[in-house]
Length: 453
Ligand code: NDP
Image 1 (tube, helix red, strand yellow):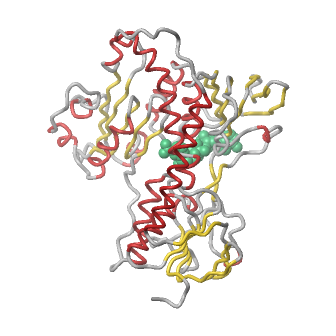
Image 2 (cartoon, rainbow, N blue to C red):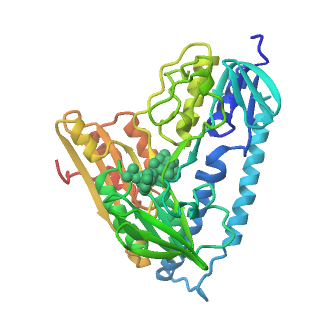
Image 3 (cartoon, rainbow, N blue to C red):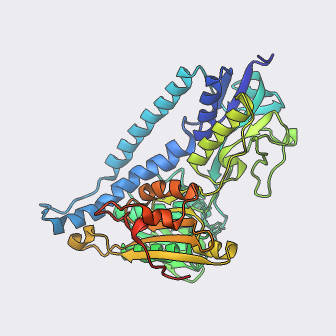
């Protein structure tokens, strides 16, 4: 046992910080956590969890329409009550905050309310108290970033969008990443006139091109107004809303503008500069394979380190960090290949491994298998929604190096396929797998003829 007050002092009780604290405590380490906002971090409070609840709410829109073809008569057109959704969501988040508190308590971790400042390599100051620790873990996550333009102060960021007093009947989102497409789908599904404005020619940069085009078409069919190759020039406040002028000259009057233009490490006031902790070019904290910063007793993980900004990545990093620093034997570095991810736009995107474009760069020859079809459910629902499934195979080894889906519950499907891709299974393995009928997912094991090489 060290002579410090604690073996580990964690700054930030988000997904990564709480997991590291609990897991380290389970090894017998003496652990404290400082948090100045809410337990559970971005994911629980203003990210994954409330977003998914709102996405469920928005899906009912389609479900009510789809129901007619199956014989259901809705006596009157369904109406949507924003305060019910918002307040039920608030109640659920409060419940989760409590669970996080209990988890820390049960693990014997001390929770301190306050923003901690790092004083030196082994000391932090929080809530007027100086505390020493053998290791300090910075797990403070990120914060939404909004570009400056005339009227940018009238935008809301993704922290502010969940608890609106009134439902925005006219909604505009700026950006073309995860948050922009997800919130465009949510507010469109909940009944708002919805616009998405993105500066590039097609949103979701970095995703498979066919997936991006398919998603564009599907979101367009559902009624989202997509404006590509444009940015916001100005926003003016009106008596009854906001006047948004785009760089292409278009003008839209809306109630709310969400800026979903990326996130930055939330380092202000932490005191890391005075320790000379090295940063990456994007101002995230530079760490090695053991999650050590340039001051080895100060560790960092999760969004603040600039890797994939995903909760399961922070959780995995926390497990690795604890194995490295509090486990019996040093562990191998974390492997960031083939991390599956989902975008909860409507329809959902699920993806793992390489896009077709990246696979073409990496391999001499590839085979692409794809299916673009009308799901069985929509033969009766009358919905025009289609589904895309796609496998990318390295021709030489037959290994499946990428799997992509756009369609209902794509995240659920790709989570399973992700195991196969991660395990390095071949197309022959996929072909030898007997499908489950009738499902959409069976397409992943029944596509036999390459769409292109
Ligand atoms: P992203 O980095 O994904 O996207 C930011 C978007 O804003 C990009 O389209 C970018 O354009 C655009 N942008 C950046 N700067 C400007 C500017 N000056 N003017 C106009 N547009 C600009 O960030 P998000 O905010 O959407 O999400 C943050 C992260 O959170 C994601 O990367 C993801 O890792 C995580 N997340 C994950 C989710 C999930 O797992 N389902 C859900 C939500 C978030 P360009 O492409 O041209 O650079």
